[in-house]
Amino acid sequence: MVKFSVVIPCFNAAKTITGTIESLQAQCYPNWEAICVDDGSTDPTWVQIRCMAAGDSRIRLYRNPGKGPSAARNFGALDIADGDVIAFCDADDEWAPSKLRELSVIFADPSVAGAYGQIAFFSHRPCDARTLSTVPETDLSVDILMGENPVCTMSNMSVRRDVMQSAGGFDETMLHNEDLEWLIRLVAQGARIVGMPMLQTYYRRSTGGLSTDLDAMEAGRERALQTAIAMGHRPSRRSHAIYHRYLARRALRLGMGRTTALRHALLGLGQSPRGFLSPVRRGALTLLGSVCAALIPRRFSRSLFS
Image 1 (cartoon, rainbow, N blue to C red):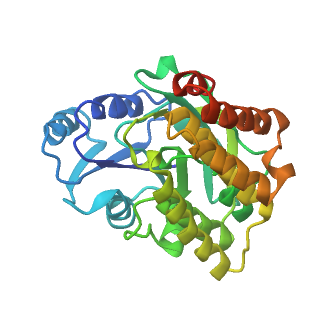
Image 2: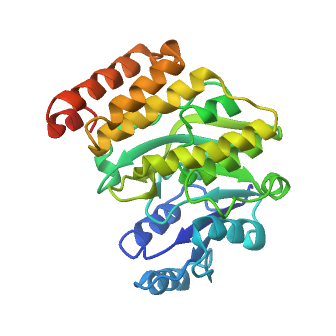
Image 3: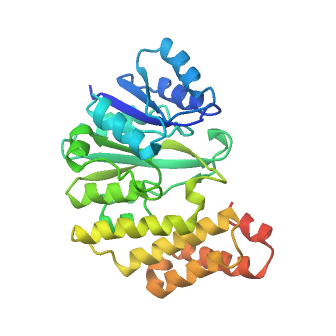
């Protein structure tokens, strides 16, 4: 059986960590270990994990205080894990019960270096999720990643341990899009990463998380772009158009400044009208919502993309 090492960075996650670990314990596939790396929590996170570990030997708890989620992932994956496959999960997300069983099947193919599935986005409870991510039919490429990264979150990503050891860990100096930069390195070095059209991960939306800072996200993507170029991959104008469409949609969902979404929509159209409007429904709705956000009250325009 494939053994999975599930790396969970934790910081002040007392409100959600129990649900996260319980979603691992509910897996149909039992051969896993959870490596919980606490980043110096000041709430009961450490105590809660320790109590759960006392009743389940697969749960392991370590301290790595004040170094951030990238350092926690690197520590757990490169220094502690002994599984065949590293799977990542954030301390506020949850997994579908069939996830590890489905991954064990895909990793039976030796050509597969990494895999991800479909995500459901929720605010309070996973059962409330109404929006699902899209999984491309083709293997992951640098150009796809530089558009709208379909992996979306590290809670949705699994990779063979030897592949990660060869490619290296996350850039610990980056706070935004460090996962994108890491994925680009994997793919550019020849790792085959496949998407699975199966709901596997429940991602908790946050109104104050790192992904709400669009300017910082753009700066992180620029660093990821430089990595791609240095490795011989120059993304297309289409990928730039799709990325700005993605930022426009995020701006609408978050109810940001009245012209923020429209600015990104126009930047995307300027890069590649065909790319921005493909698929037509998504592109047209984003453009319409961006125009509405600039002209009508924020509450109404935000409701179009909630």
